[in-house]
Amino acid sequence: MFFKPLGDNSPLEIRQQCAEIYVQELKSRDYRGTISSPLEYWNTASRFLMNYYVSDESSVLAIGCFSTDKQTDIAMLHNIIVRESERREERRGIGRFLVERLEFEIKALGLKRVELTSTPEAQTFYERLEYRRDDPTSNFFYKLLNED
Image (tube, rainbow, N blue to C red; front, side, top):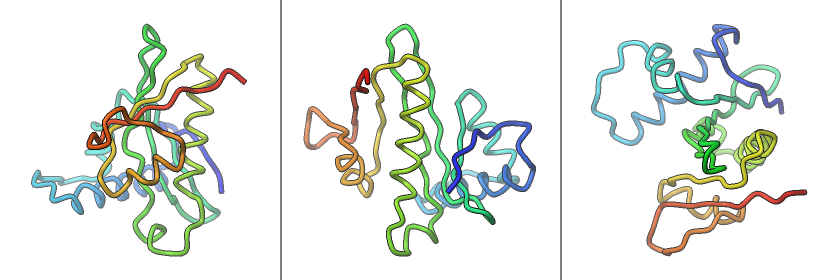
């Protein structure tokens, strides 16, 4: 698997695949808005985020983004999405690989805390990655990054 930054200079085919994954996830969550162009929608939604993707030799497998607040040493994960067809197959560790690589990038920026809001379906996943929540009924998670 490969972990790469996603930006305006990324190949159009890669950007389109990322947009399709994002829009498919929105639609699976009963998004009611109109999306005329997945790529245009993705470009707008991710404009102020640091965007990355995971791929194999042939296609994009997952996408993920984060925003930063250097004044508080906090990064916020956004849109951690594994392609639906990859979720249904035997677990390959794509989501774990993506989150761990994002944490590495965040740590390289000198930030010490990662936060996220999880869907109910993904809460166990984040707990396995050592994310914590102060209230067991909350969907807000955080993780302190080690100095090592």
